[in-house]
Image 1: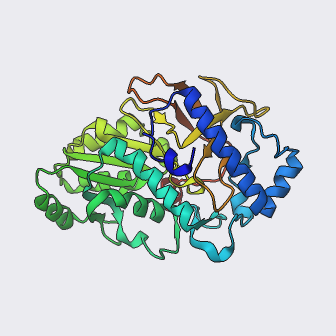
Image 2: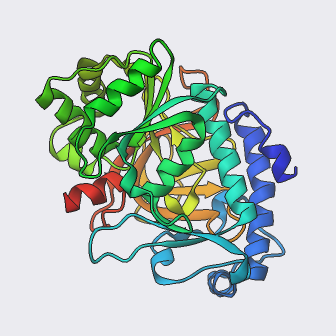
Image 3: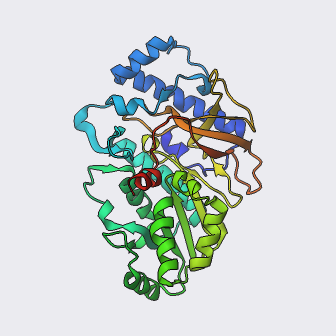
Length: 361
C-alpha cells in the first residue's frame, strides 16, 4: 500500500493483523531505502548481520538507540534537499539530537499529525490559546522540539493567541480579550506540561483570575519528571486545571512523542491510556535481553514509524520505560495497542520539553 493511501486510513481503525501487515510492508521498504542511501545506517545494519534480502517481521528489525542522533548526522537524502533541521530538547551542556527533514518527510509528518489530532478535536479549525510565550518561536529552519511542537499543533488553530508574555508571565488582558472575542465558541489549547503547571495554573491561583475555559480542549506533553517530584499525578493535574479554569478532565489529553519521530505521536484517550495509531507502533523491550515484553510487563520503549524518509528514524529504541496495557480492547473503542509511560530509564538524560525546561527553571 502506498504511503498516501496509508495516510488516508482512520488512525485507530485497524485491528492487530491488519496493522501488522501494513507496518511490515512499509517498514521493510524504509529499511531498504535507508540501507541504500545512508552509509552510516548501512554499516550498522551490516554489523548487526541483517540479511536485507530476507527481512524479518518489523518486531525483529534492528533498532537505533535515539542517542545515536546526538552523536551522528544521519541522512538518507542529499544535504541540499534538507529544508528543516530539528533539534531535541536538552539542558545546558547536553548534546541534542539533530533531525534532518526534506520536504516530503516534513509533509508526511504534518499529514499524520493532522489525522491523529483531528480524530480527537475534530476537523474544523477553532480559536487557539497557546499556553506558552511567542518568544519560543525563532528560526523556522532550525528550531527546538518545543518550538516545533507549537508550530506543529498550530495547524489546528484558526486564531492563535499566546497566554504568556516574553517573561513567562500570565498575560491576563490578552487572555480576556481572546475569550471575549470568542465567547461561547469551542477553544483549542496547547502547551507543555510543566509550563502549563508552573506558569499558567500557578499564576491563575496566585492572581485569583479564573477564566472560563469550560469549552476548551487541551493537548499537552513534554515530560512529567518535575511534576512527579512535586507529587502532581496526571489526575491531580486535570483536577487542578478544572478548579482553576473550568476545563473538563475528559477534554485534557496528554501525548507521548519525540523529535526523532515527529508526527508519530501517541495520544491519551478519555480512559487515560496512550494509543498507538496505524502510522506507528510501540514495542516494550525487556531490559535484560531486549526480548519483547508482554502485556503488563515493564520494559524499554521501542517506537516504529512509517514516516521518516530523509533520515533512518523508522525503528528507534527510546530511553523511556513503559508498560503495554492491551491491544484492540481499550474501553474508549480505539483499536491498536495502548500503554503507559513509567519514566526515564536509570541514568538516561533529561530530554522532554517540560523536563529540560524544568531543569533550567
